[in-house]
Image (cartoon, rainbow, N blue to C red; front, side):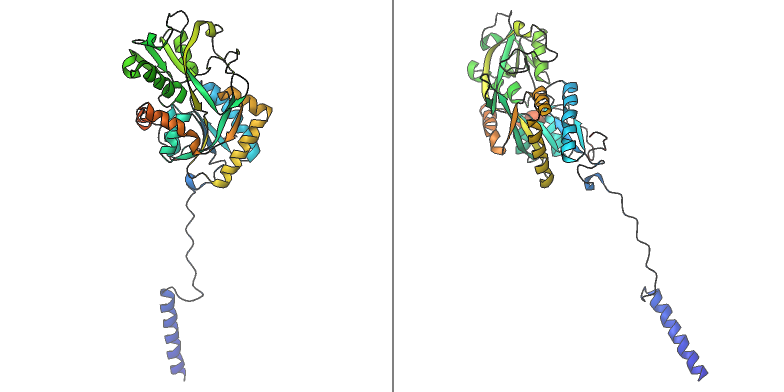
Length: 346
């Protein structure tokens, strides 16, 4: 009996060892779970401290002005939405679009021609567009461009600029390049590339006007009227010389041009997008919002829009023979970064 019992015990123990070695049995200790991999920037919740919503502003004015007012807008949006925001001012119009396509910018204030490039690249879509007061004080969905010369130049029309130096704003600016270039082509029968002796891209509307005022160029393009705070008014833009209206004059205008607007990048969460759009509209109704938007881009209000709002700008580019994507490719691209960096900005 004892021998038989011992034999059974040996068999049972052997079986137990085999089962344990194979990982079976309910009493076996499970291996410790591997530590979770740290969250990557793309996996962070958008609008959080470590993944703020990146808000970009077209570099059509002085960077200091854009940054200061942009931060005020971001602060208001942060209070309204409870989300974190970070303000950036790209180095160029094209860089701003590249940044959106690379997933580095989430929400952007864009010029009209920029918006068509964004749509052509399928990197985002417009949600709002500016409304500005025209000369009669009525809100308008469009604006115009202008061509300026010095008052003492003796130049009275576009033909007088032949063989001269000229300042555009940026190759992706509708009022600072596309429409003035189209006007020159239509009224003189010549391409701006051969019509002028030389051209520069000033980088912003105030810079273009000041290049003319300072005698660096003989003519300049800008929106109507980059020399003053209110189109048709007489309040000088910050930084403009007191005699800017006396020393420069308009010899041609073009338009209408659909107003610039605000776009969301492709893939931006729909629920947060709706929240952001509402916060922007609400902000535009407040006293501080009205002041900031007027100071920034001379916006008096805003309206909801779809992609078709900018169709006429795309048609103008085709008519003028402007390769928007090609012009954008000539400008430097933004430095590549994996994702928006953490920010303590509101």
